[in-house]
Image (cartoon, rainbow, N blue to C red):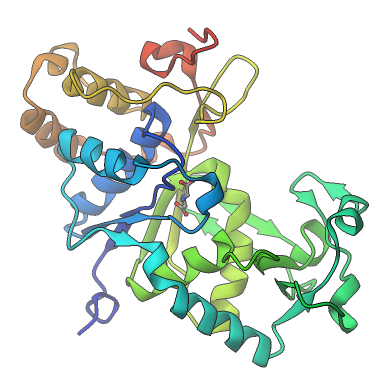
Length: 311
Ligand code: GLU
């Protein structure tokens, strides 16, 4: 019987191997892990390696080793998204056949002229009535029906996709599968019941829910946790120069992550063994301490310092 049939919790951490883990990614890993383990659920590790141009050689291995050194224990084998491309393509074909996706032959320069909104370019639906050309992207058809969901930490969220993003790409012109399609497919097939991830991905959720509905998949529960930002309000990320997590002093780094996640660990916990830190965290984990919080000031966490001098 599947995990879903049991009604059991399945969570996951799904890093892209674009570089080593940094303090911000540790927060997402910790929050999803503690949430799953405290519920007595399973926790999966999925490497989202479907965008080779953005990937760094060796990053997947490094991420896995770093997580293991920090004491994370995932259930089952590590999943690689790149091993599931046939399934992704089948689902895209199904969406096209059902009239929920279509080919788009717009060129880069056509797209550069489209109107932009807070979520990026808003595709005006140019190719809805048909497209010519052979190097085409595939877009999911959106509509004006608002997509609303109740985020476990950030409250009710709603988007009208046709107005806010327009029809969005699920297979790129270069043939690569887009993130939204792959994440929906894999979360569903792995029986994921709760997605805990950074708030920077919250805007993507309605597009993912639309795909779930079109494909007849259940929508998991979502919890979007705050992200570490610098003084300019920019998210700490590989792109903004976040330093790689170092494994020599995992304990204090893990305790700093718990502190950043609002769990108020006692100072002396930083000197404890990793196993004791995890035991404390599992006993005390309370996601609701993050309710409504959208950012964490990087300055408060020297470990989150960026190379260009934050903190
Ligand atoms: N692979 C995405 C990232 O590393 C996360 C995807 C997700 O959690 O839905 O940002």
